[in-house]
Image (cartoon, rainbow, N blue to C red; front, side, top):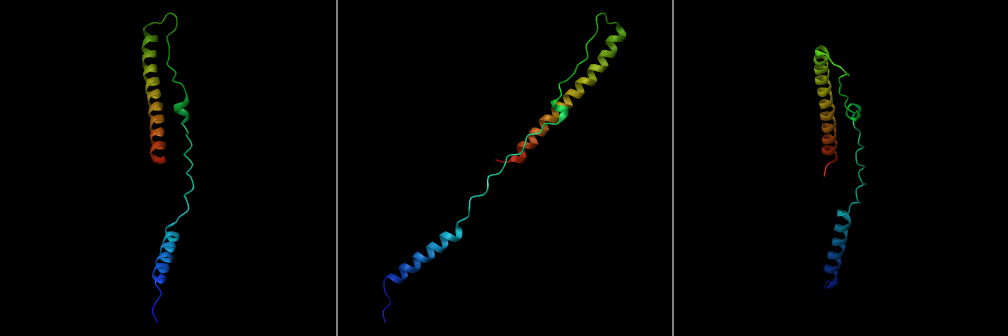
Length: 94
């Protein structure tokens, strides 16, 4: 008995449909972007000491020390905010 000419074609069609179903995957669920949380130290405004009406030499020296400490604290809060934003940007991916 001679095989029919359409049998190889039917086998190829069946194999291609099976392969197409095997490679199909559902779309991944959309990722929720990370929530942006800024540290409290970075959200506070920087306070810088000022001098009174008639400052003396002792007032100038004390204000110099206090302002230096306040500037360092302000810079640390700014750096903390930048590092937080960079970490959030790196974790969200492309």
